[in-house]
Length: 420
Image 1: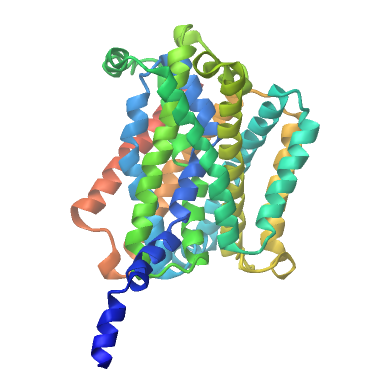
Image 2: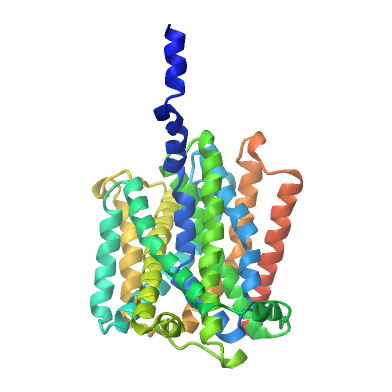
C-alpha cells in the first residue's frame, strides 16, 4: 500500500513541477549578465557602427555568439565546481600579484563601463529636459537601494525586471523592415583594409566581452549556491542570454543603419541622445523617444548593478573581506563600500564630463585590449582548477583557445589600427 501511495505521489502534478521550478530558480546569473552586456556602451557602439558602415558589422555581432557562450559557460563551470569566485581562484592558483593585475583590469573596465552608463542616463533625462543634476542622484539612489537590500535573489529579480525594458529595441527592427538585399550586399562588402572599420570592429568585440562579466557570473553562481546538478539549467540560462544580448545589439545596429546611415565612413554620432533619432521615423517622435529611453535606461541600470557588483566581489576575493549580498551592509562594510564608491564616484565624474560618443567607444576598445589577459586567466583556471572530469579537453578545448585567440588578435589589431 505504501508503495502504491509513493507511486501515486511521484506522478502528481506537484512532484512533476519540482524539476521545472528548480530549473526556473537556477536561471538568473546568465540572463542577467547578458542583459547587462547590452549596456549603453554596446548600444552606442552598435549605433555608431550602423551609422558609419550600414549592416557590414552585423555578421561580426552574430558570429560572436558561440564564443560568448563558451566563455561564460566556463565561468559557470568554475563557480559551480569550485565554490569560489574568479578573483579568489586566480589568487589561489597564480598568486596575489597576478590576482592584483586582474583586479586592476577589472576596475578599469568597471569604471569605464559605469561612466558610459551614467552618461546615457544623463542623456535620456536631457531628452525630456531634465538636468543631470536631477537624474544622476536619482540613479545613484536607486542603485544603492537595490543592492542595499541584502539579498542576492532580490537584487537579481529587480535587475531582471529592469533589464527586460531592453526588449523594446526589437520593436524597432519590426518597424524598420530592413532590406535583405542590402544586408546581403553589405555582408559581402567588408572594408578590412580600412582602419576606421577595424576600430569599430574592435569596439564591438570589447563591448561583447566585458571583463566584469566573467567576475560577475562566477561570483553570482557561488552567491546563489548553485550545485553541480544545476549546471545543465545554468548552461541554458547562459546560452539563451548570449543569443538575446547579441540580437538586442543587432537590433540597434539595424535601426541605425536603416535610418541614419547617410554619411558613409565619415558619419558620426555626436551624442547618446541622437540615437533616438533612429527610432523617430519608425515609431513616431513620442513613441520612438519612449522606446529608446526605456531600452537605454534598462540596459544602463542593469549594467551599472552588474559591473559594480563584479568589482566589489572581485576586490573582496583578492583582499579577503566579506563579500556576499546575503550580508547586511554593516556586516560587510568593505563589500558594500566598494560598490557604493564605484557608483557614486562614476556619477560624479559624469556630472562634469560632456556627452561624447567617442569616449564610450574608446572604453569598449579598452575591453578588447584586456581580452587576452582575461580569457587567458579563464582558460588557465579551467584546465587547472576544475575537477578532472569537468575540465574542457580535446577538440572543445582547442576550439575555445583557437576562437578566443583569433577574436582577441582581431580586437587588439583593430584597436591599434584605429589609434595609429
